[in-house]
Length: 77
Image 1 (cartoon, rainbow, N blue to C red):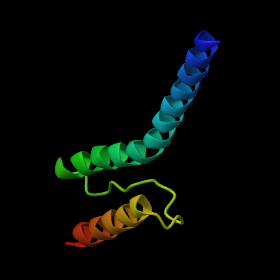
Image 2 (cartoon, helix red, strand yellow):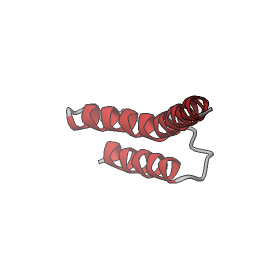
Image 3 (cartoon, helix red, strand yellow):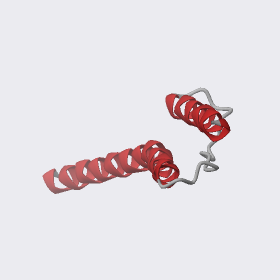
């Protein structure tokens, strides 16, 4: 009986860890993509823009909109 409880709890822990990894990837991937675009811009490619679901209202979308706005203004200078 005790052995089953250990296996059951281990399965639950693995499920929670897997879900946490999927959720964290949802947030870290767009930020990593933005870092890559910003590095290209730093190398002189001012036409670079962040391609992200900007219609969203989360903080990552706000950051993408702000970056694209800044890039538009820098390209005009």
